[in-house]
Length: 245
Ligand SMILES: NC(=O)c1ccc[n+]([C@@H]2O[C@H](COP(=O)([O-])OP(=O)(O)OC[C@H]3O[C@@H](n4cnc5c(N)ncnc54)[C@H](OP(=O)(O)O)[C@@H]3O)[C@@H](O)[C@H]2O)c1
Image 1 (cartoon, protein in one colour):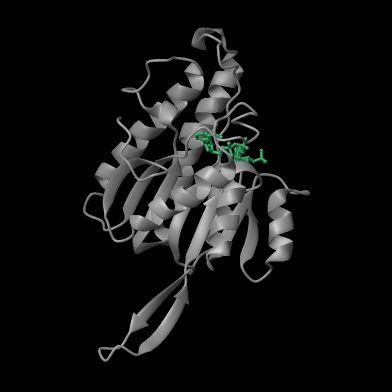
Image 2: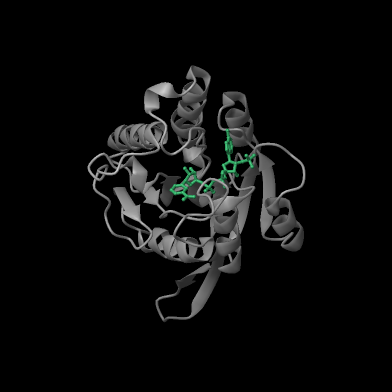
């Protein structure tokens, strides 16, 4: 995935590799995003929460020139600050924050969740993700994109089936926080994207999910790339269609 700049006579003068920063990339959708971007020729900095063997480490071994692995737990503001400092001077075309957790069974009533689990889900999916966005966004090019993995379940308007009550609440809260963030960025030229990848067979999505990763991530990346040069906030599914708030 390269950007080509041309002289006025049309001769190519410069080719630059897309620079992508993926937060929460050890497995599942984050890992698939790393693989997809590397496959499209991008250079990727990808984060892991803890060290040790992972799908990400395997990909990074296989693509040493294209993938760098850094440490980030989104619930650790000190680690957000350290990563920001470590990457000082770098510019990314795209920041993708994918990290997220779901701790309660599908059919559990929201009020039955342990308080510690509720707090941990909110801390990770909302506060941690937003601190990561706000802490790293000045590494993103002025015309670049900040993309956050939301969920169709974050749509309040579409919630007619219930289920995953607290998880839904975290993604709805995340959407609201990103909307407020976008208001503060409204004079800027970056794309700000909330993404709904569909229900996908990962550790979180489970074996009953309707989509393979390979059915979700390539169209999702097409959708992100189609937003290049389009400033402002959108909540989009993998096909690029608006998701009702
Ligand atoms: N799968 C679906 O159907 C689906 C649908 C809609 C939205 N989503 C969203 O897509 C994102 C990825 O989901 P997934 O299905 O790929 O889930 P997953 O397979 O459970 O992977 C979750 C990823 O998030 C990382 N993570 C968790 N807590 C973190 C933290 N505190 N700091 C940094 N990274 C952390 C995990 O790292 P570790 O390996 O270290 O735990 C892992 O890499 C989530 O935000 C999820 O809500 C998923």
